[in-house]
Length: 144
Image (cartoon, rainbow, N blue to C red):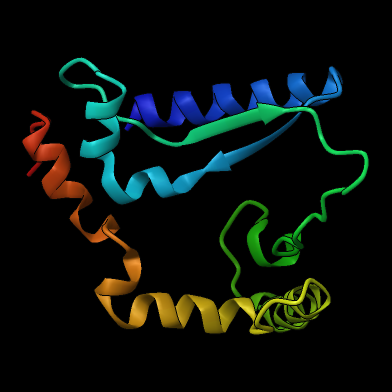
């Protein structure tokens, strides 16, 4: 777990440094769909697993990237203790913003809440991530 956190923090710092140099980056979280396959492809040693990928390059000047809206701070930031009261309104507003973003991009316009419910409705929607623990065990990690 500590290695995953350290890798994530290092990657975020790398992304900030890349942006300061005029480069862009994209995290590839779908690596979690088949960590055994990715580990084999990368010839990773025992007890090493891929957390995510990070693509790096120069952003296109002809086709500028659109930044997908993120959950507002009111839904994720808590002070001193966890307080869920502001979350429903913040999530409802985010659902509308994200749906509008998808519609502008010509994508199916459903909100974040609907996406989360659909993803969790059936394990097949996890695209292999439901097997993550079993894969880690086969890769030699002593999980219980």
